[in-house]
Length: 262
Image 1 (tube, rainbow, N blue to C red):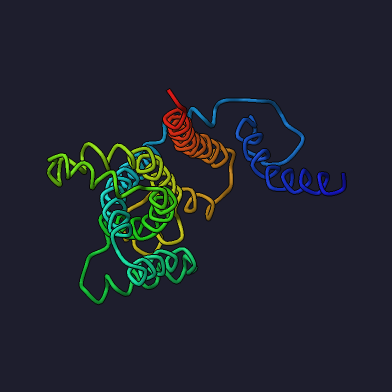
Image 2 (cartoon, rainbow, N blue to C red):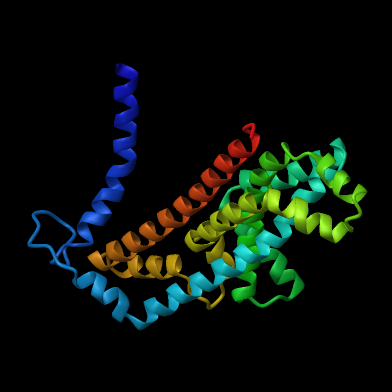
């Protein structure tokens, strides 16, 4: 009973700030203090009427989409290589994957900024995408490794024995087996890129993403407009993660159905 109470208390402690953010996004007054003077949707209307904010949202969506696509290609390639490598090669890939996750975002941001400065690369949208891919690829490979651990290489061998080319084997055997995990991992990479701030602040240059726009507003003043932006971003991120979870559930149910005797 005590353990259950502690668990619910911890969950409430974590969710309470989010609830306050959502609540104050409907505050009619610019003040972020009680008592409420009334509920209003004026701040949500201002979100869509702010041209600079719309540009930041479009920029974040564009960067997140590019990150998801690049992560999809590189993550799938690295995951398939992981299956075919020996123990030493797998250990090397795992170490490379864990490193960006284990290091603080501040360290990763400084390292990437130093790399771009030393190589003469101008900070732009491309450098942001590269930074986000560095963060997202390890997450995808870890997810893919869990899926590929159950992959049966004899299926590919059987397809090749039946006359399928290497490309046909990948397209008709390998890809259908790993596609759900690839898609869900790409959606997760999209969400990670859309919300990323720390590393982005080092490699963005003059570009402005949504998290950076929110930060610049908070440095001047804090109004319910920031709460409205944060609420919409929260809803969007949760929807993306639920989509990834739903794809994973569909894949699990499909796998269980395939195992049932006909």
